[in-house]
Length: 250
Image 1 (tube, rainbow, N blue to C red):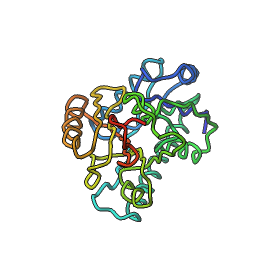
Image 2 (image 1 turned 90 degrees about the vertical axis):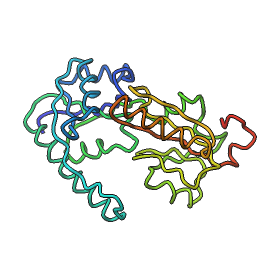
Image 3 (image 1 turned 30 degrees about the horizontal axis):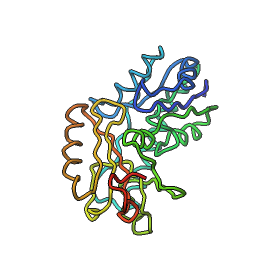
Image 4 (image 1 turned 30 degrees about the vertical axis):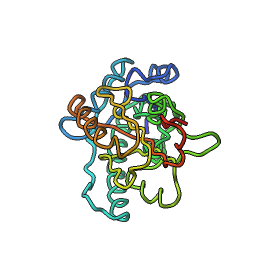
């Protein structure tokens, strides 16, 4: 390692960069990002952040990861492990060849479903972390809700784990890392859904799942057509927990 690293959460783009994060970027010499495929629209957002702060964006190709449908837990974790090791090697190569301070630009906030901090630790870099605006924050703001009822918890999970977590008793769940929205079996639950929040193609849908599931599918398709990509998430709440609230708010 020849320099230091700043892990910077940038929300969904330049419009979400906080003054603290902007000050950190001003002190960096370059930013590092991965490119996923030949045409990566998400890379353009990182480029916009870098350009807004006068930073060179150094790009490396993201290693391939096994995304075969139906992977069991062991196979999924093995695929992620292999991908993680390959990405680590790519980052190490760049950081070893350049001097100065590098910014790692992280979608949303680095604390939620992002591996950048773990990667930087394994690289052995001196680093700090600048928080960003997270997707659950924007989801709650857009819908004008609180993510939990008074004195109650909110459980944050992934689409892959949703059913297991509900079976374990979770009744108020923020669901991230979706690859489509599968709400079969939740017809009487209430959902607050959003896509590309704060970015191009933003869409919002809320209501009883059985009444709005088709609307969500249509909105998701429209978002992808407009932006070329979809990042969506939703809050799902059990029916007893929204009883007596016609709008479903907490």
